Length: 154
Image 1: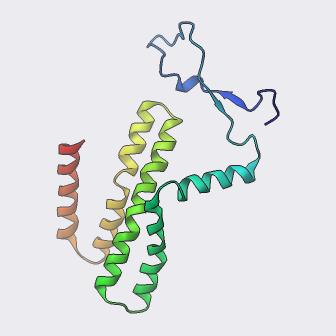
Image 2: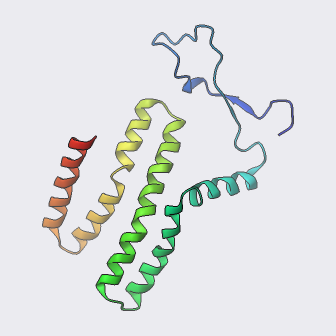
Image 3: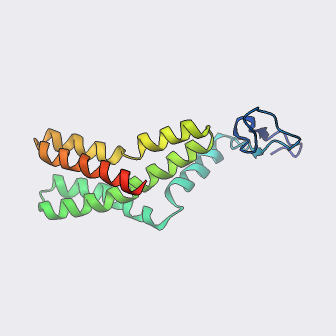
């Protein structure tokens, strides 16, 4: 920050008060602070802190390496499943958080497309692993449940 205001940028594409004609009607444009005004190092530090330490659910990220270790060490399937289930919860939440952050810097159409695409990414990953294991019926029922829940709840 240099005190002159050079670290502020105009967000002209993100003015929600615009009408369809694109005119501003005398309202000032929204301004945001340039996230990299302090340099790349502080920007990365702030971003990683925001991604990993903004919710207590992220403490379950410890289960990611624990699930991998349990699988490779020959723990029972119940332990591996439980650790993997606990590990996927914060990953799914972080995926939603990052998608919302990306959608904030785009227009509503691109933001909706990002939410629709990445909102079901965990289901796609689980389906790929189930298909590799030959569990076609599980994948079919999982996709049917996903479609029904999206139709009913969204």
